[in-house]
Length: 352
Image (cartoon, rainbow, N blue to C red; front, top):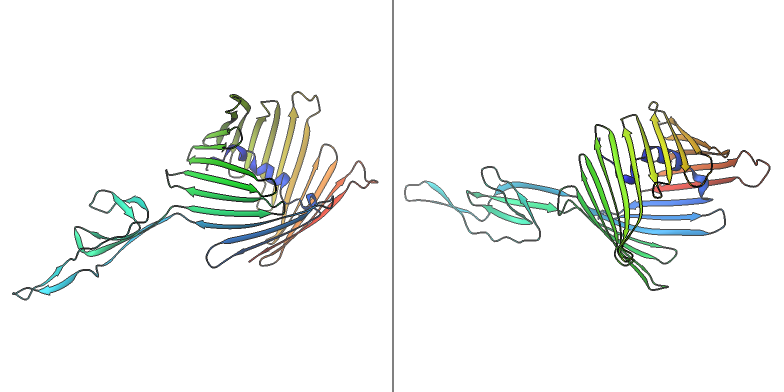
């Protein structure tokens, strides 16, 4: 089982408690489609209970990592018969075009540069080596109703195996505000580390790391402001993950706020989760929240949750037809049933 990122140590429980509850927005719509070129488009629109609307358009192209080679007859070679009638093949010199470089091992030969193009194997003049390599590049461009533009460039496994680099550049034309961030993700079988750098503010850095062994997890996170030369915050977490259940304790806000969560997949139809939160300085009681999910059939499920303040929420999700999903949800304050504190929401998702 892979090691999660620091923010995902409690992900199974957090997703069950927080995701797919549609009362958060009065109404939302999401449209997803993929062009023949591989570009994925997503358009979302949301209407809050306060009457505000927001939207976002996103285009994303992923060039998945791929490396392979094939051997084909060499069209640059020719045959002739010698004076004894024996057929002999004479290789011709072959030029190659270079677009990117990696490495590949050919049986019986030392590792050679992998270049994008066609190459002649010296010891096999009757064959050509056709090499193909992609670097795992992802380009994402978003534009929202606040007229904010954001571009993200991701590169996976290019500099080292398991390393993903991200460059995020934002621009707000109304205020001429600009942003530039660099993110690094490094993942190995027993380690998952991340570093987030804000290059124009501070600059600041947030670094976290998680190590794991046989399901046991331990991680820490810290922030640093270079301009102030000070640590801005730190957190720690421990957890245990198994195929059907997980548990974790996360201490955040400079180890002032503690959250313990538990997730259990009872069977193929039922899931349950609970989360308890306590702030050591606020003096308030422990906050508790429990949630459950029941899969009604292969295309629909229902969820319900309630917290220690008596606020309950329910949700229903159904696949109406391939590519069309409907979500319905509601939130009800059981302590104030006679007041207008309840919320309902609806969501439509279209995929093509």
